[in-house]
Image (cartoon, rainbow, N blue to C red; front, side, top):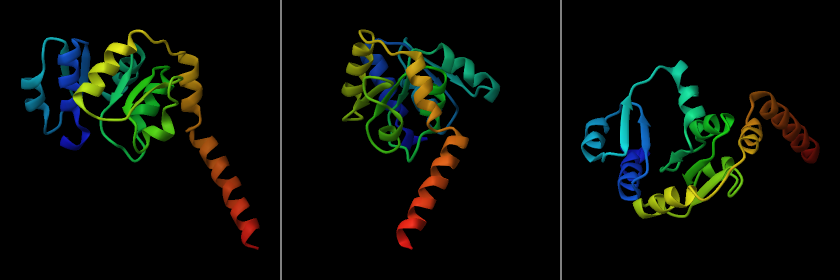
Length: 157
């Protein structure tokens, strides 16, 4: 879908000459396939059961658009992988800069191309990424919500 701004990632991979695998088939698929250079692979639709393997074998997950939350970023981190994301919206809650990924000030081609090159000089601990993703586990979220509601009820009485 256009709002995902995958074209930015394709152009950044072309510019930086870094490998990029795109999963999914949306309205932009044909446009992106024409835009893709030799380092970009469009896989199209993959089975949901196969997604964890792609996360586990990637170097990083890239997110060019602003998401309210961004479950894919959490899935990547749960697989021990860092995220390179446009630093707005849900990425601000999910990515810990320098520990579990990179937050970019701009979602421009130049910004992502530069980050893709610099990423090769950095290291991220898979255990840090997995631990970070655990913050969003349903049971932890439910416990935190219950505690917060209790706090709010106590302060209003």
